[in-house]
Image (cartoon, rainbow, N blue to C red; front, side, top):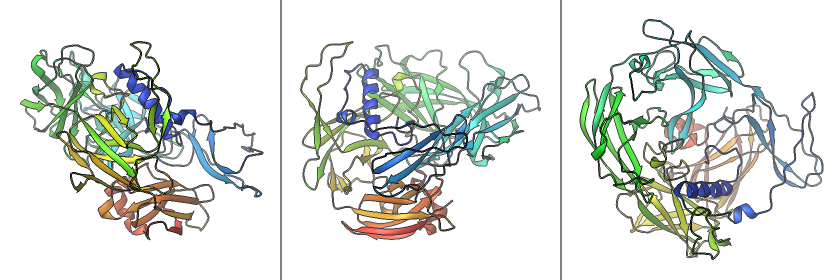
Length: 561
């Protein structure tokens, strides 16, 4: 939900919506609004520009504002992941001072078109064509769908339109059939111009223009059948039906391989009792084969197997399922329990009995999230069957509880390596350490058996960096400013990022003591800086900075285009 929310949408409001959707999917009482949703609404003013594009807002109170410009089919300057159909600019209104006039440039959406042909050059109708942009999730580069064309027509032609400026991969995506074989089943997913992997494909650059004749010659490759058995399946699934192995994910064993993690594989085994499965149309290669399900209580079961597929069928693969566990973390802020407010009691569930607990519930101001560090962390997000989801189409977590003594409990966490990420910290606060059984786990830990309690230490003597971003000509520039920690501390809890305003000014607070490099990009995919391969070419362009507790540093930095 965070990934799909509009830019600037409050994280606390996203969390409330996520909890409500989880409750709906799991048949639990509606958790109701939290204190975050009962705050005074942020005022919003709307204007329509004149024929020359001019607009004005009068009588604004001093403060920081976002100016959002929307026009159908147009996009703002590249920013974040570039997928938003509007432009957002931050501006400061200061009492007694004239606010500089803003110039906001919009670019018309672009178009990619072409023809899909088969191995002998014949046009292929009814083929699905997708455009992809590179996005970053848990420090890994993945393919994110930007647009999908209607199936190719009788001449094999396709059009994908209304695309924001940027670089795209274009691919013919082959969906395997479960029933009768189709002519398309003889082919494999192919990237422009005729490659079976994105790394070898050619990218298309769009800047509000039309790019035509992007013709794709679809490749035919030998495929294999992978079959075997899923062991330790629960007896019944979340809807009370007998359990079977039906939905699988197949990801390249090399986590650096660009992949579309939304693709699922369905078992074609005629008999799926006893966990038997069969998956057709697998291109040779090394993979991680994953299976997932829920039992009738909603508990997640997940398993994986490393497989090497050749041009012959692979039989007798065994995937052992493991039940998820609950993980506890205790948070202290300068040695005390974290602040919290009391929210309303859970409302009555119209589809079930009235909740027994009618007392107000504690709501923490500091938010903890559990994120997987596995290469397949994102595969269970999106539009997936309910039995493969822990709630709201999101893999982690299904629910988090909080107690006034600072104990957070993450429910239903699958096996694998995970990291706790902290948000909602007070202005000068930062994560100092996380420890479990005497060892630091701030960089992550393994969930195999129920782990011990994790102690999360937060301190409030963080540092602040203020400054201005300038472009190559020395003019102030809006940019994404990122503080990247030294190599030994590169996990998401120690990175800091903020978007400068229209005058190039920015403030970053709550910085943990240590050494950093500070960067400013005028255009950068969201979270790309967490990826080592992305950051490597820029390492020598960062401005070095060492911060100590409680200090305030002022810097001027040059933006990277």
